[in-house]
Amino acid sequence: MTESLRRGYFIFFVVLVVFSIIVLAISAWLTAQYGSGYPFTAERDRVHFLLFCSVWTTLLSPIFPTLLLLELAEVLTGIAAHVVFLFLSWVFWLSGAAAITASLDTTPTCRLFIFCSHLSALEAFAWIEWIILTVGFTCIIVIALRAIHRGQGFSAPMFT
Image (tube, rainbow, N blue to C red; front, side, top):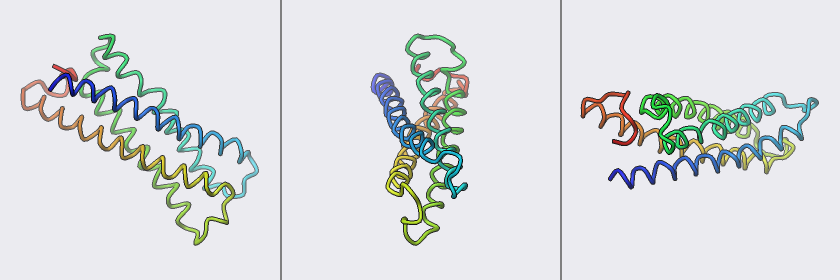
């Protein structure tokens, strides 16, 4: 069980980072296209927030498996650090995906927005990222509950 859990752990973080890079590319491109004179500031700000979410995830996600692989920084490789990071990421992505969805759903037609297809792709990948985080967060919670049941608590290492 531990070997398959360990393999799934690394696959989860690779998939998380890959989709985050996709959102990073789309949101960075949209940010560059908007510039400072874009007429819809709410839409622009939502794209900027998704850019933040993707940078957050792309830069911080690889830290956990790298430290675990190198067996460094036990505090950052424990269950508690994973729960905190994944929960914060989950909230960020939920907020960003919901915000861009609300922005696109308030208009009867997408023609009002410049780069409509790009915004729709951004929305789709933001929700995919949120779903990936939901699965990962649920798995970490199950691991945490098992550790609590064993009497180790949240300070337990990810794999025992």
